[in-house]
Length: 90
Image 1 (cartoon, one colour):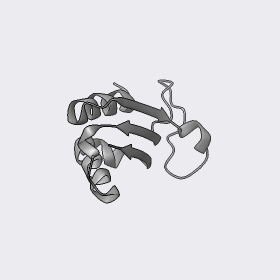
Image 2: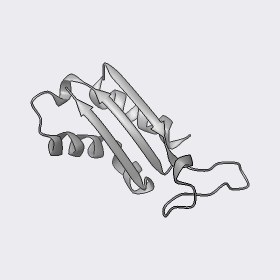
Image 3: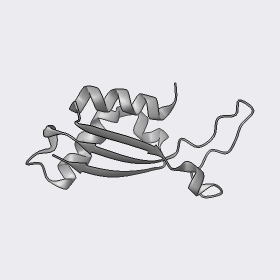
Image 4: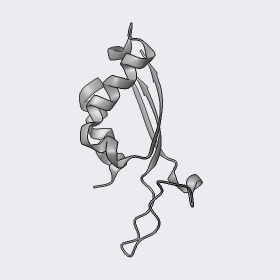
């Protein structure tokens, strides 16, 4: 299963978001550090993500607290991701 799909499942379960957009931005970083290149199986990327979440769970939380909540929800996926841009709002 793709990392983006796993992220979506975990984030939906953790936050029941009104809006969730996960964008694999790895293609724009080809040749940069942390990018997995095209392999025999045809899989590439899945290292750089932009995530937008709108969820009531973030209301009243600081920016740092929101980011910690997302990292906790993603758990063991975080070390597999090189860059994670988060846009979080309650």
